[in-house]
Length: 172
Image: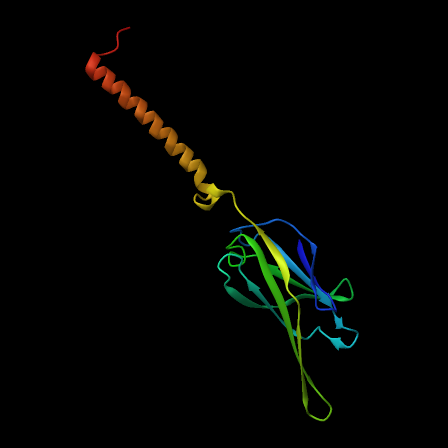
């Protein structure tokens, strides 16, 4: 599973890289992991996490809220799983991602502390399709092959009919 780790230095490191194909939908997941306790001071288990990303070709910026999948992942981490959908895989190339954590803490004196933690950018690589896959969906290739064979058969039938019309029936 494609894995990005958010460190206490707020870097985003790809720890496991797998091929995610352009225009794939709902077949892969991206795993995001981060420490439960940020710099041994702030509990991140109840923070809200947003992922912002830029598509590689159109440079469109998208943002999505992530929901923790496992708050006790390998004991000291929080795990987020993102289903890889057609929005993320729409364009081939390197998707630049950043993360922002938001946390509100009510203090003893009824004041509120707002924590906002931002990360450096990381990369999710989307592998491009071969050129013909961009124009003809895979499931159509078999049908297309069958149609071509039918057209070839019709062409041969037409040629045989033409031969019979101009030269008479075939003699045995």
